[in-house]
Structures are given as structure tokens and as C-alpha cells.
Image (cartoon, rainbow, N blue to C red; front, side, top):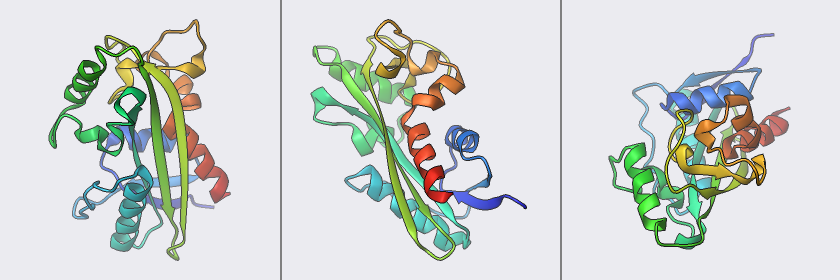
Length: 194
């Protein structure tokens, strides 16, 4: 039986690869270049993910998956939250966003952060499924590691244990998927789709 084709509402190769490694049994295809996604300006990760999944489904006629994810810093009242990708400005690089977060937390004792991912799925008929995954951690003072992307070089997950100070960017892909916010959300979605 051929795998079900599902369009993923992203052009981010990292996200596409990460989801593909978890959602086996689906043929994930990237969003066609001509499809314009709505701006990610909702107040929650869930609303942004649903907006993108609906748009991708309507534009392609295929079932669609979309995620919105980011980092929440407790000391900043949950910021940057849904603005994580644009924290340092609309065209900011991963490094600029991370540098800003590190500087905003430089003087605070509470360095607790959480990665949050909302994953939305719209099927052929337009029915919607929404799941969320979280990964708690602390923010390192200096970035380390070459794996991952975004805030990974400074995110130390609590799930690896109190003796393990590796950042997400220092974990191997299997370790990261086992505990990551996107991994948790994708496994929940996989359960829902079974």
C-alpha cells in the first residue's frame, strides 16, 4: 500500500526532515513555492499551526500538517513564545534570536525555559486535529554544539537528567527526537492518525 501523501506547511528543511523521521508511513511533501502561508501573528502556537494547515490543505487539496513552535522563558513571562522566529526582528537569523534571548536572561537567576510545539493536521475532508508537545529545560549561558537549529545550542533539556549538561545541539538526533517538543507532538499526532 503506498504511503499517504501529506503536504507539510513549511519550507524549513530541518522541520521537514525531523517530522519525516518520526511520522513514518506518510509521504511528506514540502509546501509548493507558489503557496503563500498566512503570517504567524496569532497569540498562540495552536492558532498559527491551524491557520497554516488550513491554508496548505485549501491550496493543494492534500491532507496537511503544520507546526508552530518556539521557546518560552519563564523570567520573560513566556516570551518570545509564538514570536520565537522573529524575536530579534522580522528577518532575524537563528543566531540573532538566540543572542537576544541570552542577553535578556543574562541578569536573571531564573533561566528556566520550555520548548513548545503545536502540530495541526487537516485531513482530506477538512477535519482538524491539534496536538501539543513540551520540553522543559534551562538556558545555558553560552551556546554549544553543532546539531539542531534555532535555540538548540543553548537549550539544556531536563529530560536527560541532572548530571547531563548537554544542549539540544549536542545530542544525537535519536536522543533529541525522544525528548523534543516536536518529537512529542509528532508522536501524539501519529497516535491520532492510526
